[in-house]
Length: 164
Image 1: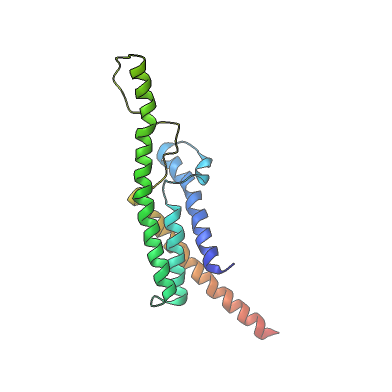
Image 2: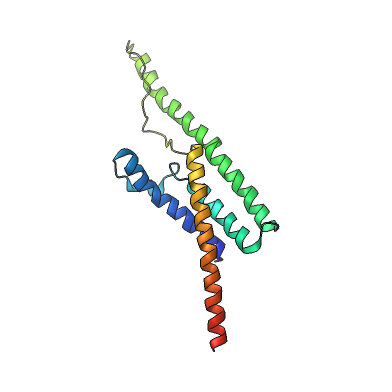
């Protein structure tokens, strides 16, 4: 597997792992299952594409087609993560509340309908813009570190070959 893939996968794993302590700091609740869920801070989608784009920019250069493809693809992924997927999650909240409303209507309850957090459909599908930015910054950092490490790896291999 090439180093760009390693860098992107490392960024995705790091973003998913960071969701657990960040959620704990915010809520005081420990939820290790967040590692396997979508949504939340930071965006692993943004981290993955940003780290790959950064790695390509540093390794191959900004004027290359590789960088252009990665950048455009990354922007589409980040737009989708905070736009369409987020709207889908918000719509899911409304759909989950419909069942309670229908039950109240069928039982002639005169209680006012209150929206509450549903438990049926997965709602953390997308990201808020700050979560996308957080993932992008994490990805840029990991892409930069990955590039530095790959340069050291090339120097080590070059020295190892010349020593033989």
